[in-house]
Amino acid sequence: MSRKFSVSQILLYLLLVAGAVFMVLPLFWCVSSSFKVSGEIFDYPPTLFPKQPTLDNYRELFSKFPYERWYLNSVLVTALLTVLSVFFCSLAGFAFAKYRFALQKPLFALVLAALIVPFQVILIPLYVITIKLGWMNTYYALIVPFMASPFGIFLMCQFMVGSVPNEVMESARIDGCSEFKIFSKFALPLSRPALGAFAIYQFVFSWNSFLWPLIVLNETGKYTLPVGLQSLFGIFYLKEFGVLMAGSALAIIPVVILFVLMQEHFVSGLTVGAVKE
Amino acid sequence: MLESIMHWWEKKQYRIAPYLFISPFYILFAIFMVYPICFGIYLSLHEWSGIGEMAYVGLENYLNLFKDGDFYLAFSNTLWYMGASLIVNLVFSLILAVLLNSALVKCKKLFRTIYFIPIVTSVVAAAIVFTLFYDRDYGLFNLLFVAMGGKPLDWLGDTSLSKFAVIGLIAWRWVGFNMVYFLAGLQSIPKSLYEAALVDGANSLQCFLKITIPLLRPVILFVMVTTLIGSIQIFDEPYVLTGGGPADSSMSVVIYLFRTGMEYLNLGYAAAIGFVLFGMTFVLSWIQLNLMGAFERKE
Image (tube, rainbow over all chains, first blue to last red; front, top):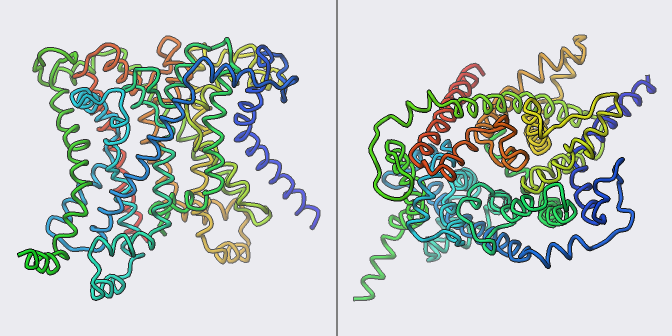
């Protein structure tokens, strides 16, 4: 009996480890290949580790392309969008969760309806608006249209209904707190899990965003990382894969590390609202 | 004077505050969501290349979609993507979740973390790595294939394989993500149900079909609908891997929309394609709401 038990246990682990290898292999391959000398990537059979590790690919990446500029663009856009959208969505979500006011229900229903509108529906009109505003090749085009996130306000409202007790708000009012102070001093700290979850969601969304930046950015120096990588891919496809791997590795690894450090927030935030018994 | 304003404000701010709190959000929402939708409807009824006058054409853009062979191809490719990613995501995510939920497995968190990593990687970067894997002559997938006695396949260059290559990348990115939902669902099923079933002599397959699946139904439905809605909008993966080719064999509706708008400069027609996507999403969301309602009434 106990032997059969351990056999099924070994089988389980084998399957789970096989799955884990499949998930990690592309990342490992990317990092490993980025240190290979040109040509070794196309060795057959492929080598797991670089035979003579080299930094040439990274040198070429930074010397011939404005890679650090793309990185800076991505970091700035992602940081600004994350902070601003978390602020606007939590502020509005707080109003819906904790106040009663005219038109409250229809306004919230409007946001819920927007949840099912795919971004591609507004892609072309938003492109025309961006041109009219003179926002092509600017950070504005990448940040401002995405600050009012329907998902964000929905998540914040759901969470704040329960996490901010009415008694706390009442006693703060008696102490002479302004309404905004109640929001910043009490509601925000009490909603930290939802804030964290939404912030990480926006971060990943913005960092990986590709279609929209591809449309509104057409000057090399203004590219974000995904658009820059795509342009490198066009130049190097089937030639200098090492440079591509170096660029990809630097785009992937910091986010993976950040995720591993903050995963509790991320995972718990995702299942808010989805898995309700 | 100032004092009386301050006094008025202190008395009234409780009533005014919520409007101030929601106004930044709704101003942005109106300009960058509501207005573009309305403008999109207007655009879709016109022919326009971005410069010069718009020409009103009524519903012609929508009617032309029915006669457009390229759109038909993009549409059927997208339906293929929807079906394939639904199967892959439901089957593999559920299997992984059930395995990981087993009482025999330790370090669950470690596995969950590893499975979740692909979703936070940049699609473009991941797709570049995958083109290396898919390479006909040097790629890792063909190496495995040949080792198992198969012939090397041209994953990205063969019209019948390009869609599979896209699904491979999608599976890699999304299976672990969906597994997290299934795992959360599985963990919410009371253990006592299984214990009772075992006492009654049920085997593990019966337990799975009679307890796990019915109790997971809301989660299964959620994963189904989000997967389907996500795959209606497929763009990044085929765009980077194959550019929609070869011979448009992996072109999705969004790639076609992108080409129509950005390359052929047919903005009205592209806007109309956007509303077809909206229609598809709307129908799926409506089905979800109704099924959800049906579940709630049953329970």
